Every structure is written in structure tokens, then in C-alpha cells.
Amino acid sequence: MRDDVRVFVIEQLTDMNYDIDDIDDDTTLGPSGVDLESLALADLSVRVEDRYGLKFADDESEKLALMTVGEFTTMIADRVAATADGNS
Image (cartoon, one colour):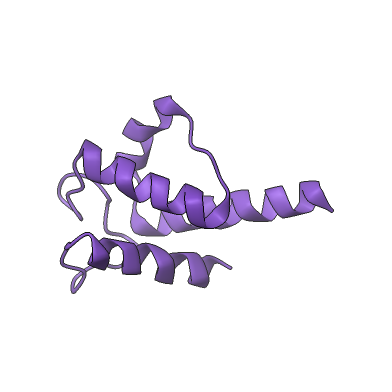
């Protein structure tokens, strides 16, 4: 699941016109990494919410900006798995 989420996130960054050539799991989403500004981070969050049926809390945006691509994709995969487990 994590690999699928990572592919989705990279596809979305490409769609948002970000250069993904040097992105790896250790690249931060915010400054000194992908360099997503708050509106772009909100856009990515909405795309993830729509795709995976998740909801991010309003106060999570600062935390997301500090995450690496690997941490972000792992968190999403974990939440999707937890939601699936809860619906079983």
C-alpha cells in the first residue's frame, strides 16, 4: 500500500508542476525539499483526502510541511490501513 501511495503522491506533485527528479523518501515536503508552500500543501492534502477517503485536521498542515516524502506516504498508508481495519 505504501508504494501505491508514494506513486500517487509523486504523480500529484508532477501534476502540480513540481520537479520530482531529485525527490526521494528523505526529501521534505516543505522548505529545503519539495518546497511546497501552504496552498500547495493544502492542494496535495485535498488530493490525498479525495483519493483515499482520509481527513487531515486543520492543525496538521505545519506538521505535514516538516515531513519527508517517506514519512508522509507511510502516514497515509497507515491511516488507510487503520480505516480499513475499522470497517471490517
